[in-house]
Image 1 (spheres, rainbow, N blue to C red):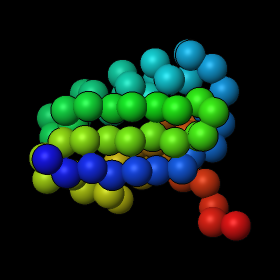
Image 2: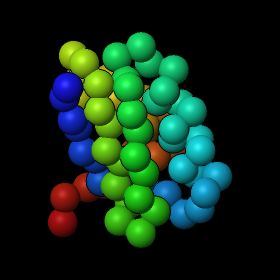
Image 3: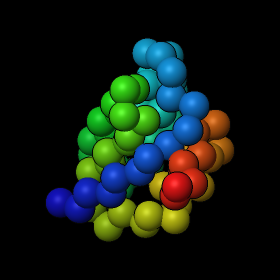
Image 4: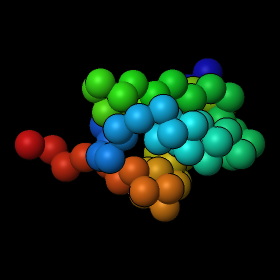
Length: 69
């Protein structure tokens, strides 16, 4: 099992959480999605995850990766 962790922008409510979960769970390699509203963090677990593909999908859903400060 592989894990990728993203800090993302725009996660503000339960609707955001559902949109992220639904958007990522359609990818066959994704087995689990955990979203923390407070931390703006998305944890994705699965097999043979492609970090760039996941980042692109998050951005497409409206939750781009947060810029490093």
